[in-house]
Length: 95
Image (cartoon, rainbow, N blue to C red):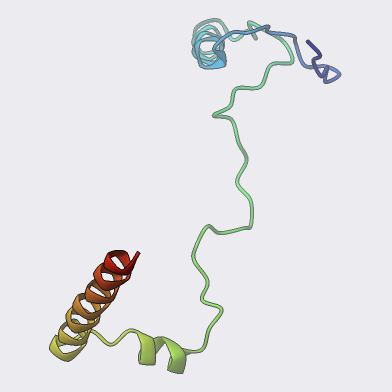
């Protein structure tokens, strides 16, 4: 079995790294030492300028036209579902 070695990163083997992360944090908090030098906990991250928001790539006019929800739309949807289910049943019966 091959493995990739990253320079400066310790080889942990097949081990749950979250356990090592918790131990690393505990020892660092209590003694100010790094348990495994070079090991970076998965919960350590830096803030960046990026945001994790959803950005619309369509126009507001299109959004307004598609976002219509009302009684007529629900009735049309129900009618189309019933119509399509009848067609599917007919197609299955014809086979």
